[in-house]
Length: 310
Image 1: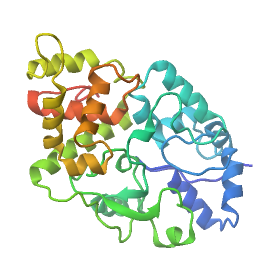
Image 2: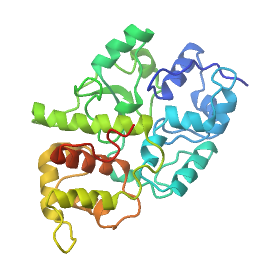
Image 3: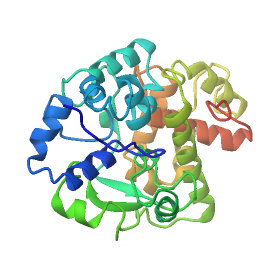
Image 4: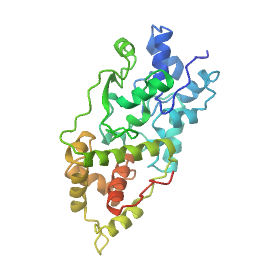
């Protein structure tokens, strides 16, 4: 049976058209509707949804969108697979196409090492502009990425949505809307300089989500070591001075920020830097690539990593 979902807006999450359809069609049994649409019991609606082949078939009359296109434009697939091997990226896409349940902590992507998304997030200025442009507010994919606390377009702190990521279809969420009366993200004391650093992480993250090819960050260790050698963090023996580097990275982003995103400070910062630079883990996640690229770029004063390549 064809499902008449409206076309998604630019940078919109897949959950937006689903929630509106449920509300407008007065769907009484939401779990059954979702199971019919995706082919399994859906529990979360952002990172790596499965059942995309079935969704593509069910919406073909209105979207004409392949499962691969849905993965790239309505989920976080491009972001997460930017840092993994081509084989892993292909395997993850295959899992997303089939109705096997949410693709999380599978195939070496290591999602579990950052703080999971609880509430959705939104930007007040984006809400204002979206209402003018498309007559509705909606949740942006780029605001939900790991490590993102600032809007990449407006440089302002994001707000927590009253809608929880695992309960977007509850009646109160549908009636109140996703971008109303949310509390701002609290990271403690901050300055304009530090906010600019967090904004650089958000900007790089949005670029990876929108433009990066799968595996574009894979095997970047030698590039990072060369850049860090230029900055004096690699000694003649070839060893990276991880203690100094982790301390400087923590000072740069602040302990409050790194703790908020699940990656700092102290030993935890040293651990994820070691995963990037010393080969202790097979697949460092995309976020730690972006953090290191942002730090190195600020010190070298030139584009680093994928920055400027899109």
